[in-house]
Image (tube, rainbow, N blue to C red):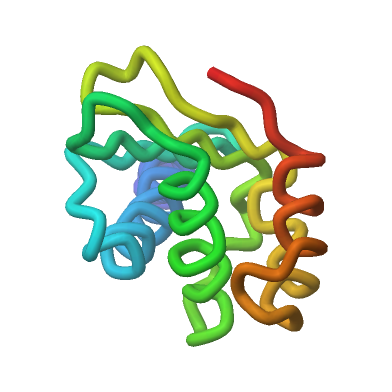
Length: 127
């Protein structure tokens, strides 16, 4: 009986622990943008920044110098299948449908490269 209760608790707490790692890692790599909230659910990492409007440049920086650079320094974002970057009211922003999927390619290119921009925008839609 004790084993069943322990197993049930372990299974119930495991996803929370895994999500906590994604959120903790995201807080670390996105610290310079001072996000007001970071959420992770079903493969979607949602980041709200303290600005009234999210520009393409801000969104691109969060992806390249945040999420993808985080992978380059050992943070594991392989479970992030979609990245959502929103304004402080969570009403405007950008959605990257590939999440961390393009990070290896993006990390191999110089920052600001046109090819890098096309890869990012090709997988992006407005929120």
